[in-house]
Image (cartoon, rainbow, N blue to C red; front, top):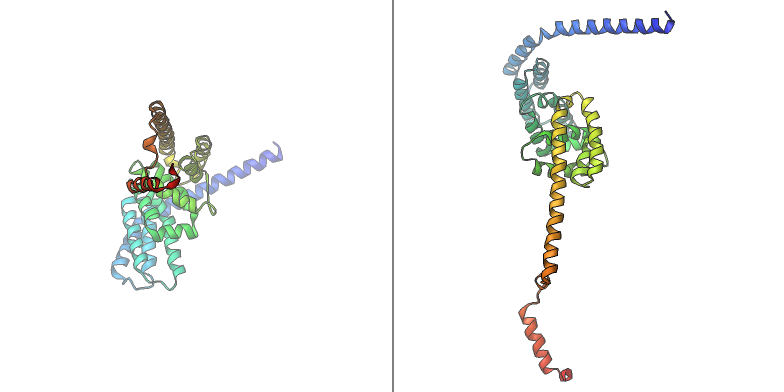
Length: 280
């Protein structure tokens, strides 16, 4: 056995032992999450909101619910934290921005696991100005997750896409990735070949993203539908205007397309012609 083979064998053994120890530790820790969540619930009930540890208790309760994968309760904790942060007076605007930035990131665990998360992430990240400002200021990479949620959401996507495209264009100089570039190519540039290339890059991004890997199938399905719809829409408009021009050309009725001067200008022109001595 060569030295290289021996080294690889030792490395694999160390990795397996590390994985086993990590899983053992995690298994032992998980049993304490329900108790921690219960204690933090009583902490929130007993401690006044102006206590310096009240906010820490809210964060701890959210963490416990996420780790137990209680997504309904975790969503309630996200809303409770959001309300507290938005209604509190922090020592500085920077601290307020920091708290909102943390909430944006932590909420990804909930939004991409809760059944209603795809709608809720759009409402919070795109239509609540203070959180959109936080994304644009401190974490523009969150646009990847917002864009994915818009694409896989089959609701009123047309108006939402319009608002999302505006934000993506505003942040283009600070952040872009295959997902945001895909939306730009498809809905702004109408570059369907470029969008098709970006779609293949999006697959790689989704497969390797912790939050988005479960959205791959819906993303591909809805993206292809969007491409086909917009291609059909553009071709429809093109054929519609070509047909209209052909009809007008055949009938030679172009007068209705020209602006008509007001009636009083006709009368004034006739009077000037009558009194004009050079009129003959």
